[in-house]
Image (cartoon, rainbow, N blue to C red):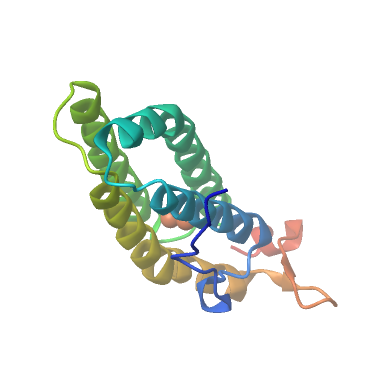
Length: 157
Ligand SMILES: [Fe+2]
Ligand SMILES: [Fe+2]
């Protein structure tokens, strides 16, 4: 049995206070840890692993971006276009990396995972938090401390 390292640990400081978004971010961090655990330095093993997970990972990230963008649209978030562009630019970079991988160019799982981790953590800390702070201002706090968006919240916008 291989021992699993937790390289990136979920911390409450990552929380945006929106459950569906936090759950998706937690899954992304799980994926990043899984990728670190498969960074063996053995090119054959890394290629096999990466070709198995990458399409699922891309689909997953796209769904996450769609969830955030939908929330931004319905809440009329003023930074929507800038945020969507950051998602788009990131997606293009990943597609490029996958293309290079599929063309058999040099590939190191650790480099790709470091890139993914750095991008995701800084994006969550700055851009997603920015949106989350806006959401907190317009949403209705519930008794359990969570926030919900009511029709009235949207009508006030
Ligand atoms: Fe996000
Ligand atoms: Fe985002």
